[in-house]
Image (cartoon, rainbow, N blue to C red; front, side, top):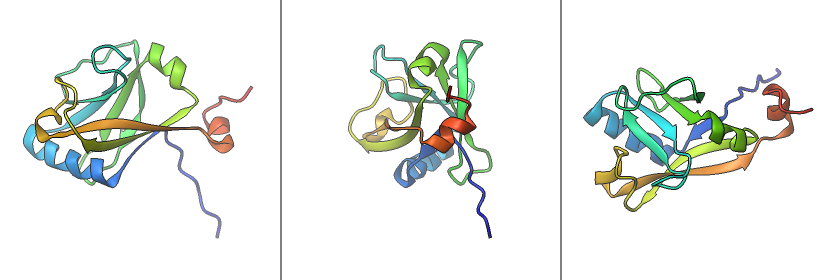
Length: 130
């Protein structure tokens, strides 16, 4: 039986998914915006839905299924996306103080991005081979 591959630009580790479930219980629905490198470098910033407004200059990378009723959407600025469009991003969590504006800050953990280049099948799927 042939398997169908699902393509995504974003993923989440089990450890980050566990923290996101706990943060959702505390703050309600969450979303991510991949920072463009200002105050917090290129940290993924996690906000309660409605606390960070996305606009026409943001790209929706995808969503994370962390075992909640609704997935967590992930966005990036269009300018930053141009640099990272050939990259798959995985949101992970490590001990340490995170961004002052991101909801995980008080937990003693911080979200980070792990990245890898898209493989040939992903490049084809996303129309990035020319």
